[in-house]
Length: 423
Image (tube, rainbow, N blue to C red; front, side, top):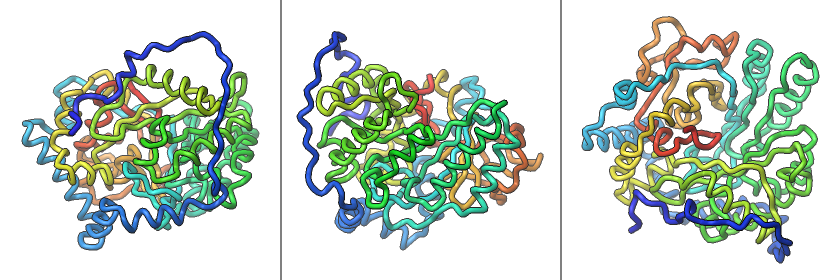
């Protein structure tokens, strides 16, 4: 079994040639790319042991009880290490986790997805039907008017493009920018799984994204077929490559273009990501050489010990060791830059959270009144604040951030956030 504290590829030691060279691409797309991935995903879910185990637990325990059991497992692992709560741990380290003005409004607009990835902390799949309604979207867009500090609307899911409100939101932000020339444009990010670009009915998606200058942040956990298909499902790598080539054809990630294309790497197992800059160089070299693909940047993201990845760790009896790895790798510099200080995560049902990870484990913000519980006690509050409770995102400045044991994942090594490293 691979040691938990090491990364299997020494990317930091890889020396790349910087000289220009002619690239000859021999990639030929497999047949069947025009067919939906959904039937294959559903078939995988019926046979994969992890998916079957999670489904059985959900049926037996329910989502709330299952999340509580998951938190208790992490807490027991920390107790065995003699480690206090994350809030106490960071306080003792002198780390400032006070909230800053919100600059990123992240909207999880639905859990439906054409894939069902093993690491997915949202537990998305074709079986999930939850989606943000029109009224909740309207409120989020209204807050752009009253929250001038917001620079980014970050759309995630599921596969956000497959939800009913996706294109409406993009079009509305484009209209907002045109109507407010006095303000810097609000950027829209589409967190794209790439395969959605090939789904039937999405033939014009790349063109739509380019027309509205949406920044694409795309999942690609490796530049090799075997690793990607192992984590994300058979055939996903080939479809992802086709998706990237399609985006490139519209100018995404191409030198001289203003259409941004970033990729996201997350480890395939219970270890920390390698150095982001070195891995980015390797990605750029391999994807250009093998497929003629270019992109702007690479984000490395640590797997959080929650949901499907927590099930993976528990099933292999590696949760304790992984929590120890995260604690031993704590970086105060990374902790200062955690995304929850300047992000707001809005769930499909309108409830608000400090980050997408808190959203998925049901760790709610403290009540928005002045008598909110201290930082770290968000889960204990009976109130569940919603986006409709806010007149402006500035209303949140005095609200403490809800913290939990999973937060050690964001502060390990170089740190981790939806924008990559934090240190």
